[in-house]
Structure formats: C-alpha cells, structure tokens
Image (cartoon, rainbow, N blue to C red; front, side, top):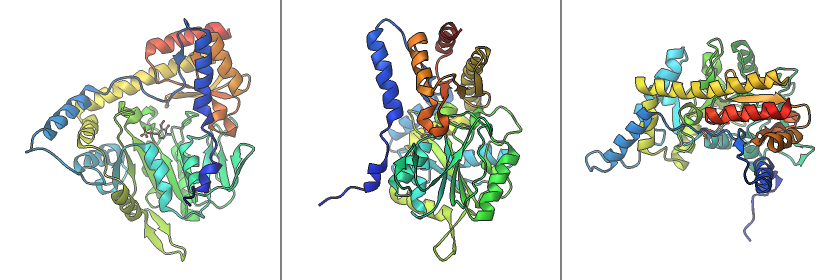
Length: 407
Ligand code: PLP
C-alpha cells in the first residue's frame, strides 16, 4: 500500500490567498462595474530592464547556432554570473565572498524551502512571526513540528515581531539550532541595523547554530548605514547562509533567477559533534537534484550588472519605492501607524479593527485589495500589508479612494 508523508496532513490549508480571492471575487460579482485595485500581492508589474531583454535575445540566438549552442550548464550556475554577483554584491561592499560560494537558482522560494533538507530532522528551529510562509511549511513537511493548535505548531520557537520591539525579534531564550531571519522583512517592511544583526551572529556562534538570512528585498535598502548582507557582519561566514533574488530587484518574478550564498567556512555538525562543510553538502544536494537555470536567463541576470543594467534596475526599485512612500504618507496622514515602506516595498499598517475587518472595509468602501496581517502569523493580527508593487497611477487612485473611504 502506498502511504503518504503524514506530515503533509499537519499543513494548514493555504487559507490566506484563497480567502482573499474568494472575498474579492464575491465583491466583483456584486459590483461588476467597480475596478478593483490590488495592493495585496508581492508581484512586480514593470517589465524587465532593457539591458536584460537585449542579453536574453542575444543568448536565445546563440542557442540557434551550432557554434554557440549550450547544453547542460554547471549545476551551480555559470561562472560569468557568479563572478559578477561576488564582485558587485559582496566584494564591493567589503563582504568577503567569492564566486565559488554563490549558487545560482530559479528562486529564493525554492532555496529557502529546500535548504532545510540538509539538516537533521530533530533540530530545533526558530521562525519569525509574522513570516513568509515558506520557511514554516517546508519544516512541517519535513516533520520538524508537532501538531497545530491556537495558530501555532508545537516544537517551533516563534520569534515575535511586534510594535513593542519595532518588529525586530528578541534573541530566543531557549536553545535553537536553525534560525530564519528576513530583512527587509516581508510582511512588516522592517530593517535590521548592523549592531542588531551582530547580536544574532554572536548568538549563532555561541550556540553552534546557523542563520538562514533571506535578503530577497535588499535592493530596497536606501539607508547606507543598514547592512545589505549578513556577510557585512563580523563572524557571519561560519554561521550564515544568505538568499537573494532578482525577482524584486529586476523584475524576474516570472523569468526566475536567484542565488544563495553558502560560504566555504560555514559549518554544521554530525551526531558526534564533528564539523562538516555546509557548502559541500549544499553543492552535493544541488548537483544531485538541480540543473541551474537556463543559459538565456543567466545571461539576462548578468546584464543587471552592466552599467545600463544597474541604472535600469535602480530605476525600477526607485519607481516602487516612490509608490511605497506615497502609501505610507497617505496612511499616516489618515492617522494610521505604519512600519516599512522606506527601505522596503511593503507597508505594515496597524488597523483600528482586526485584520480581516480592515480588509473588508478597504475592499467594500474603496475597491482596494490588501493582505490581512493575520494571514502571516498570530502576531500579524490587527495589521494589514499594502504592497508598492503596482503601477503608480493605480497606487495614486487607490490612495485617493482609501482617503475618501476612511476620512
Ligand atoms: N523570500 C521572501 C521574503 C519573499 O517575499 C519572496 C517572494 O515573495 C521570496 C523569497 C521568493 O522569491 P523568488 O521569486 O526568488 O522565489
């Protein structure tokens, strides 16, 4: 008899986005003439930078010619892309990372989801609340949690991000082995300072733990005092892995390209306490289960690092940041407490009701879709997330309607 992985039965139905869709569809059916504006989803709307499109076309043409055709590429990604990433994203910022430590992939979602499989099942995990759901669900699938009740899984240490701690969780009081952090944060938009991040790195070193640092939104950081990478922090090379993505940086959500940085000095331990290279384990995993990303996509990603590509990608980020600033300004003017939106595309807004009631209010009175904070974890209750990923005209119209609805 074929049996299922019983851990999958512990997973909660993906209630958040299906419920948003259900309520939105119902409203649309009752109001067929109302144009709904979606500020809920974290997907970009602007096209790829021209430099990326040109590189993409050139690479596709290369595939049409026997002299330049390419078959399977290196599982870790082509050297031309990894060299650029290491130099521009790390060495130029004083972070000691080499091309050998970069693993190109088809998304930070896959990498943040897959990485846990190289660690033991009985490790203790710390996960933020509220949180990007992939970290938690992939550990549930792997059997690292107990059952779910009162909005939480047994066996997980939840790192609470609240107004009181300005959405930067305190260090756990118990022993944890694997720690997920995400800055700039989805959904709160919060950023972490160098000294705060140093305390996490010191904690991981002291406890022989490992930090999984999701920096998918680092390109939105404006404040030069804030760290863009955990590898700008002393001692991080031994205790951290970093995830980056071209999705939000350069519009690659549909094209798919990202990378993960696993330093050669990053260490995990056997049952008997022997140190092993996490880099070697991840290389072994990727070369067994993955074949990198298509050649044209990697050439398109490489083009982000050209002079023109850098300017065009920067313009995209600035475009969304302007939207973010408008949303935050308008919501604050209406008397709502906001976080994020300055170094992040997300604005985390404290409603004056519960999350779903605020969602319904914005949908019914303004025709605007947001994301209820409660869907990201227990600590998200009472908040909504507005996303700056939309065309500016839509954001302006949405804010006008919200102003009318709420004032
Ligand atoms: N990490 C965070 C925090 C995200 O919010 C997202 C996407 O929304 C991802 C990773 C996924 O990125 P990618 O498109 O590279 O899979």
